Image 1 (cartoon, helix red, strand yellow):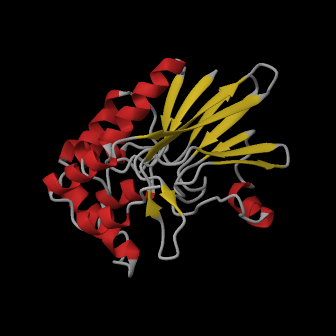
Image 2 (image 1 turned 180 degrees about the vertical axis):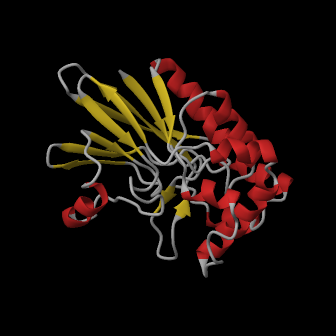
Length: 243
C-alpha cells in the first residue's frame, strides 16, 4: 500500500499544485492531509477547495481550529504575531460552507494494512499544538504516544521533514507543502520548497519512506501575496530565504 502524506499547506496553492502534479506519477493508493490547510497563505479558500476536491481524509490542525474560532489563541508577541494576523485574514475569507467542511476534519486517523496500524495526526495524537522533533526526548515521546499504540506514527506541525525510530516504531513528518522552513535566530525562515512524503507498507511489515522537496517559483507566490492583500506580506517576503 502506498500513502501520499501532505501537511501544512497554509493557503499556498502554487506549492500544493506542484506536489499534486508530482505525486500523480507515483500512483498512491491513498492521500492523507495532516491539516493546517488554509491559514497563513495567499489563497486560503482556493487551497481548501483543492484539498476538498481530492476527497481525502484531513486531520484537524491547530490553524484549522483557529480559523473556526479566532479567539482560540491570544495574540502572541514577536514573529508569531504576524502569522496570527494572516490567520484572522484567512478566516474572514472562508464562508459557512468552507467552515463546515473544516469542522469535519478528524483529530486523528488510523489506517490498517498487513497487520500494521498507521496513526496520522497533526502535532501529536493527544494535542494538535504539540510537535515531535528529531530531538524530542524518549521520555516525552512516551507521554505523547504511549496511549496510542501503532507501528507507524505520522504527524506534521513542525514543518520539518523527519524519519525517526522509537524502539520498534517509526515516526514520520512529511514537512510542509506550503510553508517549509529553515532554522533562523529570529524564528523560522520560509524557503521555496514544497515538501511531502510517500509511505510504502509491505506485506513483510517493512516500511519505506521517500521524502520530496520540490522547488517552486517564489517570485510568483510573493506576487500573489501582494495581489490579494495578505497582511504582513512584505515582512514575510523579506524573511523568505533565497537559498
